[in-house]
Length: 101
Image 1 (tube, helix red, strand yellow):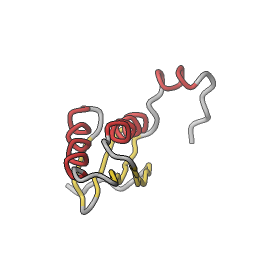
Image 2 (cartoon, one colour; image 1 turned 90 degrees about the vertical axis):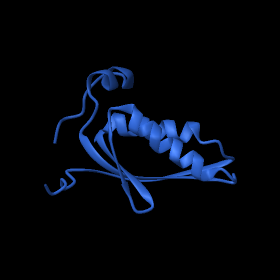
Image 3 (cartoon, one colour; image 1 turned 135 degrees about the vertical axis):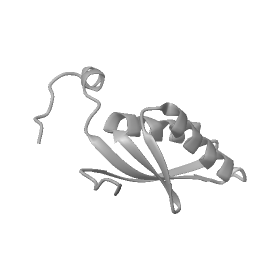
Image 4 (cartoon, helix red, strand yellow; image 1 turned 90 degrees about the horizontal axis):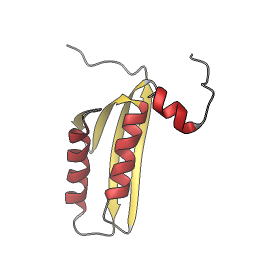
């Protein structure tokens, strides 16, 4: 395991994007009739981001990339959700098995 970096959070984020991670991500914009549009827009935004790989899975979306990039995509989904109550459920792991070729 790598030792923790010293410096301010901003300095660390500029120099280290964290480990390669896999994330199972689900967005729940509650209390709105257009919730599916909000979910699809978040997925499209993640695809356009260019720093993460986006794969659909049953009732969720898989995000693969560097930790800071994955967290940035989830933060954008949270911020852009047009709902009174927003829930994000995510499981993030490193060292996840790769897809079989």
